[in-house]
Each structure stands twice: as structure tokens, then as C-alpha cells.
Image (tube, rainbow, N blue to C red; front, side):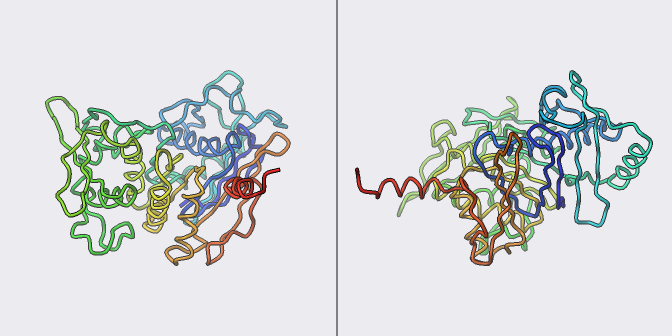
Length: 377
């Protein structure tokens, strides 16, 4: 598991050093660097997966992140034309530190070529071989996800690769292919008393927690390489409703399905999700946070970018209830100071209380309430 990432001269980061744990929440106003922090991990991963990182090249354009050219990623006030990354794991291996020479027009950056850097890079990459610095399996679900569709893609190739797609476009396909896979009885994401530990049943359980009464049903049309996703709903003292197609029910059901699927990733994965709260009501956001907590306890490293105080409160409640320890969570607040991004990381105590509350850190509700209750002038 990654336990620290340091980023130098990349986009809005002059020299950023962020400790990470099992569950990491990235918070802050728009344009403060949360997405750039995620993009740093994504370009490293796509460079590693393609084999270019071992050849000494950082690929800026790929399926996970397409950031343009070197001119687009170099910190504007950089003292030198070098982009640096350091990744540190908790498995005893040395930190993997890589420095890349900036090129204004190139879509890839090349590692520094002095003898000591080349030798160090070779030794460290050899040590990290077999398991990438960012975990054996990376799942990234972006903020721009696929909404309701009449038909979803059916692809055995993508299913075998365990792909969800950065927009969640293969999530339904993955669920259809993997629905009979069993989660361990000890997996914290498996609710006690549920008669089945099949993936599709676990998804259905958490779907009902996020949107009470909703049930997922999948129908494969192999001749058309398509899957129909439908939803039925419980009714008090009556049978369920008929199955409705995805585009005829609430937008949030389809939009949250890739997030639920990602949070049920196998142990050892790194799961990165942007804005999981999108199109969900506050109760659903809080329950989704509980699933994220349980996913981290199941051995999945979680990085969540969120603007939701309800999601954050869901994590704090889990700490207060003893579901997860404060040391297993991290809150990182991103803000700009003098043109560069800095990060404040307040800690939690056993009651879910923050050690500090930075200005602008989920305090808008209190400010609005104060204005509403104040006497009119």
C-alpha cells in the first residue's frame, strides 16, 4: 500500500508531500489541485503499465489521463525544468524516486540522464517490479461518468480484464460477468445475515442502502453484444414493482453503480473515485462513505475526491462507532497560497472530531445557517 507521495514541479505543486493511509479524502474548493494530485498518480500508473516508465519515460497522454504536453504540466514558477515524484510503500521497499526533464512540446517527459540518477532509477524500478508502486490493480472512476442508457456494452474482453472504464462504461458489463463471484465471509463489505455472498447480491444490498428499496436486474442480449440494466422497487406490504429500464428511473441509480462496483474491488487494489456523491441525496452519500470505509478495511486503498460534507461525516461516524480507527483515515484539505497548492491534513480523534478546521473546510452550512437565523437588519 502506498503510504506517502511527494510531487515536485507538477502543475500547481511546487513541492507537495502527502502521507496516505487506507482511506484518503481529498477536499477543498474547486481549482485547488485535488484533480492534479490524482492525475499525478494516473500518469505514473499509465507510464508503468505501458512499460514506458521502465524505459525512462513519463507518458502524459493515455487512457487514464491526457494532460497535453510538458508545457501543460510544469509548475509555472519552477526553479528548474524538472518534474519529480517519490512514492513510498509500507512493505519495506525503498521509496521509488523519479525525476524527469521537462520538454515544452513533448507529450512525454524523459528521466534525468546523469549516471547517478540512471543507476538509482534502475535499482529502484527493479525493486518495485512485479507490483507497481500504486498497487497491483488500479481502478479509477472519474467525475464524468456514464449516465442511464437503454443498452450497456457486453464485452468478454473487458470483463476478463476486470475493467470498469474511467467513466464507468464497463461497470454493468463487469457485474454481469462477475456476478457469481463470492466475497470472503470475513470481508467487512459483506453484511451479516445476508444469505448469499455473491457479488451481485452484495451490490444489490449496498444499492438499497444508498437508495432504499431499489434492486438491480441485468439481462444479457449476446446477439447484440449488449446488456439491459433495470431496476425494481419494493412496496410496503406488497410485491416489488416491475423492472424499469435505467433511463426511466432516478439518474443517481445508474450514476452511482460504477462507484459501488469500484468499492467492491479485490483486496490489494488502489481505488480512486472522483465525486462519488454526485446525484445522490444526503442519506445515500453517508451510506456510500460507510462502504468506502469497509472497502479500506477489506484491504483496498481508497482515494476519494469529494465536495460532500455528508460523505465526510459518514467517515467520521464510522470512526466514532469504532468501525475504523482514526489512524486508518486521512483528510487532506487543498488550498492555494501565493500561486501554489498547499495541503492541510487535520487528524481525527476516536470520537470523529477533527484536530483543526481549516477556513473553508466544509463550513458553508454553518455560515448559511448563521445568516438564516440572524435578525434582519
